[in-house]
Image (cartoon, rainbow, N blue to C red; front, side, top):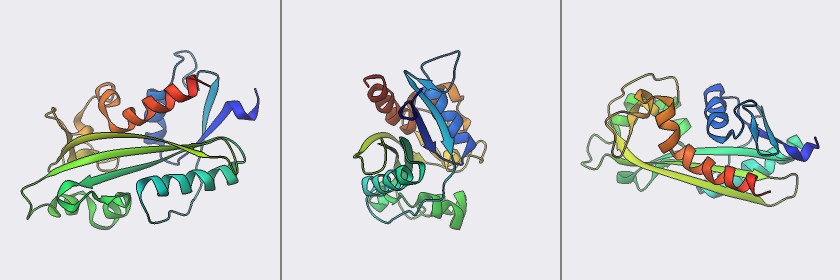
Length: 195
């Protein structure tokens, strides 16, 4: 197997890794296989620039490809409140750390519009100096008071449109067929299987 057949997913988040492998896997006997590719992971501290979702993702993928020296997959997850013109967006991780889930819900207290977009953007780069390909998925929903486990980002305050449960309350097999991450990874899988 050449190093080009191994793609390093850059994350230190065990929950995210499990979800990505569960969605991407095309082989029941070897969970980390997508066609001819093997998915591994590595936690790397990467500088996060300010900018659009696409700019942030491309920068992360280019930086990761330089560190790894081969094919990488990076992810940027956003939560955009429609009342705030899609903010906090790519800065959601910092908002969760700074004001917590209750603080995020309170940000919409003065607004009638509680709708939000969960956006997941994956960047794939074959190696240093190569073009970054971007794959994006989006799920519409509403911001609600926290319900369910709070151990996975903002899942407990996001209720997808058409459902009565938050992401956190959903069975993983259901979430993994409707989530923003699923919609982006579906495009990643199609791309990898075409190579």
